[in-house]
Image (cartoon, rainbow, N blue to C red; front, top):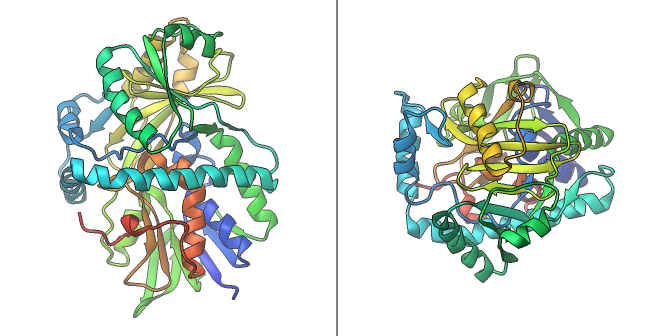
Length: 416
């Protein structure tokens, strides 16, 4: 039966939800407070990463965050502030950063990433969006020190045990893989299972496809209230319109936590700011990489090379901290010594806020409080990678079909 569905949020998760719900024959309206040209879905590294099996909340991360708290240029920065939501989230993050919880999360993260990787391929093969970059060159974890290698080797061994394709790469092999750029690294671990895309290409193509299928896209429209009637959302009020949908999908990224408060829901969430620099000239880089000691990402995208990174918890703002951008530029040069990111490229840096749950796992599921509300947010650094899988799961939940995987670990009501 056709339903009138409002999706709050026009990022990768919101648009992929609209994509799969449209295929089920529903009438969709996507509401976004911005113009769907910026934010985390546009400034990310474009990775499709089954290899990223370790959640952000892992042993030692809080200690690392505290250690770096007073260095605003550090890769993992938590701005000291007396904010009750942030303090609660930090406590939940601490409680989630245990070996046992990480072990439980690993197979679940792997499964949803593999589903999403296949769905990216399906979207490409369908021709719905036309042609877009989708490559499977893997991901190089470049390291300078033995300590970094040994740390990543543990992850690689686990990934290999789970059936993911992984290979060790020495210096001479690295030169064969990347012959057109000088790399200052001792070697790499090559996650051959990974792929990459160009987000700034994919997102407009997805938007155009959705519009062609009758999806209504409302931009620069902010949700100011959500009215309920018992166990049901009755209406969604914005600064411009009022909607009375049959179903509501909350996929508003870092702002999902604030919106959940309008429903008196407990949805611990913090915006984790990331930065990106685009270099629109030939770099010689052909394979995506993580620069381990610099803790940043490099992606050869369509028409440019992207250097991205950092995780900054400083509130939901778009302030660009120059010292953090410079840290990315310097990190790039430390691994690619013949590449210097110039001042114009640095000045053009942009940021985006990732929605981060306390345990690093997404919130995907039907609300127990409101029968016509589905929540899809909290993907941390895996939002791009998990966009299609989340959209597919959302459509299955709305259709009351058996989900493509067990999503009990993603329940929005989980206790931290």
